[in-house]
Length: 165
Image (cartoon, rainbow, N blue to C red):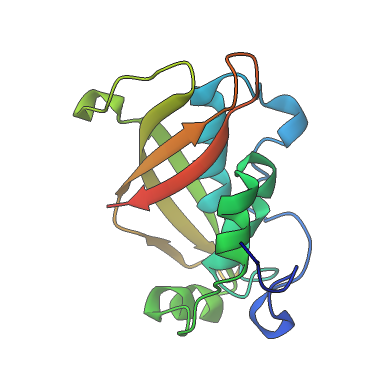
């Protein structure tokens, strides 16, 4: 299956750097054979944003590349948002905000049984935006569902789907 370009359109991406709210764990510190650790890392990366370096939340999603299945990453990369980032992002940007996220397991809400090759994990996420001008805002809490797969029982887990509700 052909994939489009190898990089997102330059006008839609921010700059490189570490979000001011704190860097999520680097890939080298996450045990790739632990589905819980991988799924949590992806959620932390996805919700750690900084308007000083990100053009939208899409940039944060792209930072999760080391934990995403190559096909899933290519799908995300090749299909950037076609609309503006939205009112919440615009408010954050006006305050030059960055986010800090609190991530807690939501597996107790129910999930399919994990197998040696497929795992499912849910995370409750609370996001607080902090403006460099002293402003603070809270996003509505979300539950993020993560699907992971691997080729063998000893291979590292890769995220193949993320759904937020």
